[in-house]
Length: 224
Image (cartoon, rainbow, N blue to C red; front, side, top):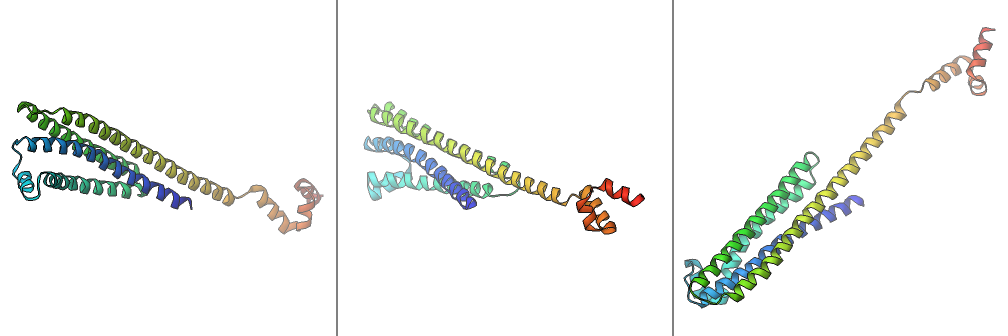
């Protein structure tokens, strides 16, 4: 029962890691949408792929499709890293190194992705300002969405740290239980000198003598 509960808690924490990482990226993607939408509305040049989708599906849907395709790459890589993290958490040997490296890979990847998106939005804002386009809404959106993304990112790191702490406690408890059981088994198998002597005397003098009289009395009766 406890094992099932620990596995369920681990799955919830891994899912929380994935959701928090996805939310942090989604917030900056929303800020990026505002910046690209303002640039397209001001007739600023965009890359050919974005321009083709905007021509085919319109400005709103075209920009959404571009950002969605970009986000799918992030979701796929993050999903693979979270699966590796989940597998490392159930490893019997060397789980600490595997879990630590997997957690560091997730934190580093999400942090790099957020930093790249943040710089991309800043470039769009710089382009808007260079062409004398009002970018106050875009800049305000970058501030608030960036703050939300940062909070989600920090929460993701805290969830990883909490998951590591729970795994350490679980493995320590299992190890301690195994060590305690081994000690008890050793104590049961350890021969007792008194029991050995009692058995020897009982075979030679009878159970009744050994059980009712101390060994000193038995020796006295034998040599008298």
